[in-house]
Image 1 (spheres, rainbow, N blue to C red):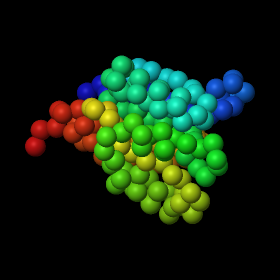
Image 2 (cartoon, rainbow, N blue to C red; image 1 turned 180 degrees about the vertical axis):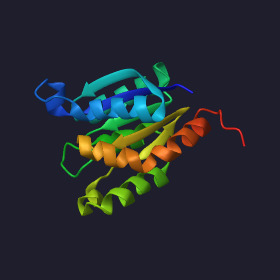
Image 3 (tube, helix red, strand yellow; image 1 turned 90 degrees about the vertical axis):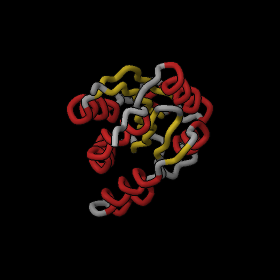
Length: 161
């Protein structure tokens, strides 16, 4: 199955063109190589609650992505609002996925407890918050990669027991 995937980067510097979006490049590689997905939409927005929410809504409702992966805005700084934006647009949380990411990474790096990312469902789309660094993206994605196909089948209504 070829999953439709959207990627959203929340970064003030990235949105101004002052920083290369290397985390989204890692996501692209993981989606294409590990998930069997196709990137149908990619966007960089500043760390603004309303802009992140609007992008998530468009990616889920208009582009009808099966999976939206966000990167950035998930730590403790005042401008890190990706989890709050995600909470406002999802209908249901998937706490086990976020817990698995934190648990997996904390075994190697205790600072993972500062990661505030969440996972949830809007309509028939799974939204997953990832950290804003290439290493963080890779480590957190690895923690849920084996369950993504089954989760996507369930969320999109294609799961057969």
